[in-house]
Image (tube, rainbow, N blue to C red; front, side, top):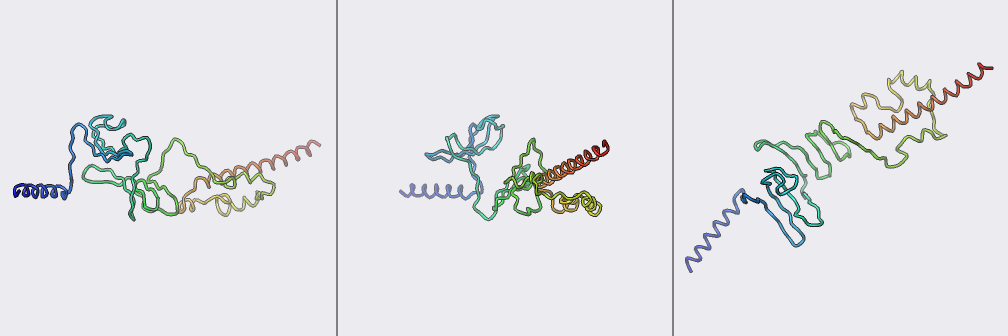
Length: 219
């Protein structure tokens, strides 16, 4: 009985020591993975031992976190702290932050010094995309109102005076504004469209005057 109790004490000591260690190794050369399972499904954390192992898109030595084949259910990475989630890469000695999701929902890619205003995505060094589609909330955000009968078209002599004084078109941001505040892509495209439509109205107006002059000359 004393021997048995001694073995229990020794087992408890060894087990407690392994739990309190700073890291715990799970080694399986053929299929190294850790699985959490319930009757509803499972999630696995593992290392691919070959190209396509443990995940169809994995390369050998990739670490993979995945759901394990259940018909439904998302893979959720979440934090319930005052801080957010940081994604980093490194060479084993130095880690570099690549992306961060803040607790307020803002997403930063790269090292961005500040996140002003209420935008949700901030990207260092710019974005390259094959396509970019921007939607307007209402038709009022686009410039078709220029062709309404009650639209006030600024006389060309006033446009000339404004350009001579300010060195940019009316209602178009100046170079200084662009440096200080940046550009809203949707708003800027609407402004440019409005100026094109106004230019078309000026052209139509001038064309009508030319027709009248041609008729007077012909008489």
